[in-house]
Image 1 (cartoon, rainbow, N blue to C red):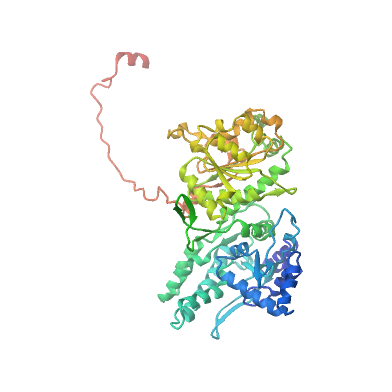
Image 2: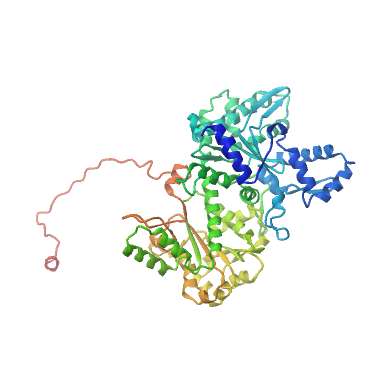
Length: 623
């Protein structure tokens, strides 16, 4: 499949028919990166905007063009001060012009409207958008991204396509094209703007924000071929280094391209052996389906700032901060958790669903071995009384962020006009982890009134009965989980649906060694299996455990079946990011890399009497 066929004959029809986008002609879009027709249609024709638009139009004496022009100017001003388009839309879901509020984006599953308003959002796809930018009559850039995405007329990001038919790949040519376009743009910015002594720093910054917005404001930029799709966020992180390279008169981008490619990662696949078209559908759904775009806007992008402690209160420092958005593997893992929960909910009334599923997976295994495995699984009550997922993530992976992104989505998850989970409990066992979670909540704009902390049985019960739905359970102050999960608590839990997110599944008793460590996962699940909970419960709670080092017992009790083979592990984590992957990606230093072997001679001499030092009794015992 060549590039033209990939784009025009497969992906664009998939955007239209599979993802529900409409196609817009490229020649209707200006350098503002706003589809004016879509924006006007959204603010004037959709349910919550009709009356406000009519009132606003009167203030403009019926002049539609002037209204639209001033609205676009306001939008562009707000975009310039936003880190990316996801943050812009999140903060500006509505915008006020001349005292009249207009909506720019409708969220899904609202308490009043359900998905009716969300369905009024206009998602658009554009092929071969000609993006040109001139300054003082000099053209600074001219290129055509293959596919550009918009919502309600507002730019989201773009994708570069490459074809194996012409021996081009996303990993080399696609990533290279994105880096080349950005580097060439910065080179021209340096030549005509940065080096212009007549311009102030603020003027230069303003031009940069407008000129480079197609790169720097994108939620993400992707490049794909038939086999793989690569994703980069925050390409602007490399702006300073690229600009400094140009200032030094060095215009070879090979060195910087290697650095950029370390962040330009391949997106994982649920089924790597699937048909090529199915792979593309999976990857483009994960990034561009309407609901996944909404997740980007509402959850996956936030600004991380340091926290001040003053007079017993915590507040975020007033600083620019750092954009936090998921690396491909992080988003993949979080989305995988949420998709599995959909399967849990669908089969909640079938207690033997996962046993039957395992039995199907054991096709080809001997009857004796199959019986052994099924009996062992039944003895663990895996996914029978309470659902469980085991996640293995190495240090440096950003586990706390995944917990935060998962908690936020679980908090807002609704089915049949009701919240799915009554409580989302984040279980931590160390003060360091407790502080990380607390900071994460503040940076994710979760007000401290939206969550509470449980440190003993009394506060845990208060959390169960309160209206607060996010609870941090600090186990360090509990004697044991068993004290927390008594019969009274289990009776309450039997009428609720709660998710526990365990930050580290192992804990130690007063600093004992690893051999004596306790699995919080076991401690939490056991009460559900050993009490009358199963006789009175109508909903199933969920336990998700995160760890860098799952032991064989945890894998056997909470892991997923990986396939049967001699001498191979039968059980694996639901999702994993191993130490090797972390080392390869540069998040962890390789502890073996700097080990230097050296030869050492050893001298020894046999004693004259080989039985010297051995008692007569020991000789007798040996015989």
